[in-house]
Image 1 (cartoon, rainbow, N blue to C red):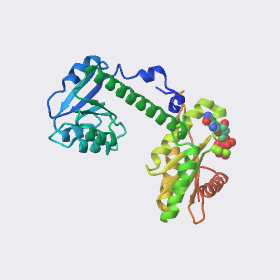
Image 2 (cartoon, rainbow, N blue to C red; image 1 turned 180 degrees about the horizontal axis):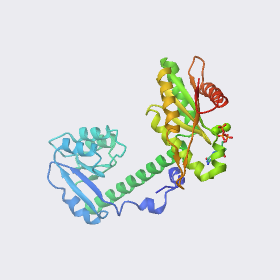
Image 3 (tube, rainbow, N blue to C red; image 1 turned 90 degrees about the horizontal axis):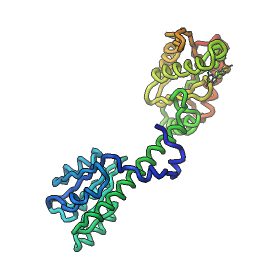
Amino acid sequence: HRHAAGAAMGVLSKADLAGGDEEQATILAVTDRGRVAALDQGSEHLPKHMNVVYEEDARMALEAIRRGEPDLVFIDLGMESYDPLRLCSAIRAFDNSRLAPLLAIAEQEQTRQLIRALDLGVSDYIMAPVDAQELAARVRTQVRRMRSIEKLRASFDQTMELAIIDQLTGLYNRRFLANQGSRLIEEAKASGDDLHCLMIDIDHFKLVNDTYGHEAGDDVLKEVSSRLTHSVRGSDLACRTGGEEFAVLMPRTPRASAKEIADRVLSAVSAEGVHLADGQRLDVTVSIGMASLSEGDSLASILKKADEALYRSKENGRNQITE
Ligand code: GH3
Ligand code: MG
Ligand code: MG
Ligand code: MG
C-alpha cells in the first residue's frame, strides 16, 4: 500500500501515532540477575501481544539485536557478567536501519552509570525497584515512537522512489540521470576510467500508438525497458529520459564492452516480437547512438554526442548503432 507523500513531511495520522498496539512486539531484557519481576507484572499494562525474552549472555543479546530481532531492549545497569555500558555502546555502534529503543534499568546509587548510559544513547531509563505501571507506560511510549519512525522511514523511501523512478517502466527517470549521471561523469574524469553513453530511441513508435492504440504503446515501452534492463549490467545506469527515449551511462567501460552491450540491447529488442495484450505480435526495433567520455565533457555534452550519433542511426535506416 502507498503512503501519502504528506506523511514524509511529518503529517502523521492519529492511527499512525497510535500504531503498534495491534502488532506483535518483542522485548529483550538483558540481565544476569534473574527475571525482572516488574517486567513480568507490567506485561498486563503493555500493548497486546508483547512478549518479554530474557538473555543473560550479553554477546548473545548483541547478536539478536544485530539481527534486528527485538523491538525494544532493556539493559540492566547492575549486570556483573558484562559491562552494561560497553553493551550500550556496542548496540549503538550497529549501523542498523531498524534500531530498537534501549531502556536502562538503574539502581538508585547508579546515577553516574545512568548518565553515561544516557550519553551513549539509551532512549529512556527506569529506576529500581521498578514500578510495573511506570515501566509499561515508558515501554508504550518507546514502542509508539519506534513505530512512527518506521512509518516515516517507509513513506520517505516511497517518496524517494517516486522521485527517481519512472512509474511506467520502472527505470530511473530523467531527474535521477541528471543527479547521479553528473556524479558518474565526475568520478570517471577523476579516476581516468573509460565511460560510455548510449542514447536509445524506439523506431517509428508513433506508428505503434497510431495503429494499435496508446495502451499497446505503453506495453511496448514496458517490454523494451525490461529487455534494456536485462541487457545492461548492474553497474550501468539505465534511464527513461523521455517518451520512447532511453539513456544508459556505463562507468568503467572500455569501448569494446560498450559496443557489446549496445549490440545486446539492439538484438534483445529485435530478436523476438513484443506480444500485445490482444495476442498480436509486433516487431519492434530501436536505434542507438554511442559516445565515449572525453576530456572536457560534461553530462550534457556526452548526452549530446550520443544524441547526434542516434540521429545518424535514424538517418541511415534505423535498427542500428552509430558512434
Ligand atoms: P523515429 O523512428 O524517428 O523515432 O519515429 P517515432 O515515431 O518513434 O518518433 P516520434 O518522436 O515522432 O514519436 C514518438 C511518439 O512517442 C510520439 C508519442 O505519442 C509517443 N509517446 C511518448 N510518450 C509515450 C508514452 O508514455 N506512452 C505511449 N504509448 N506513447 C508515448
Ligand atoms: Mg523520440
Ligand atoms: Mg523522434
Ligand atoms: Mg522514436
